[in-house]
Length: 231
Image (tube, rainbow, N blue to C red):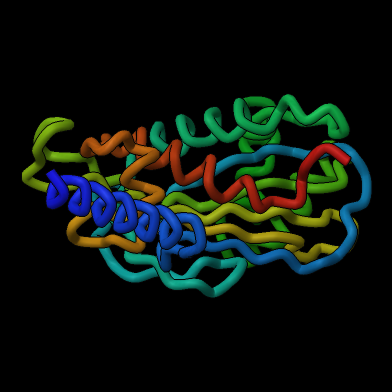
């Protein structure tokens, strides 16, 4: 009986240590950076995400055009970026201290600008500022979807795990600067493979997530650090 009790105590201590590691560790696949500049104004255009590589293009490393961070990019269907954009809007549009323009309305302006320099990707920051000015907005929230690799297998066992990568940026229209950036770049791994990323394991309820579930989790994680919150 004493051996059983001692084993239980040890197990409890191990779990406590693991939970502590999970709470204080930062996965290299997710991070955010805030410039520290005060946010000015209330009107925000949620432009959402655009894909970095379209179907038919080859996988390759790409630098984020706003931060220079490197992602291993793979071709992604445009509807995945739209889906992630709508999820982003759902997560933030309830902030009472800000007025949001949704992705669908914002895409209309982008389409109207096509045929000029929009879409050339030569000056992405300038183009995002132009979108913000079209709405007389103070800030623009936009990002790039670099990878959306679907899980092969079922939630209880996989041949290949889901893998998702994206960046998200908050842009000052007046100053034409990046106020905040977040990134999520993750291929799900089992708990035994990566003890320091227990947050993903527990948030995923110990199962193998789909790409949609992993992307949604990533959004929830990085926007917690976004300065765009109720005052």
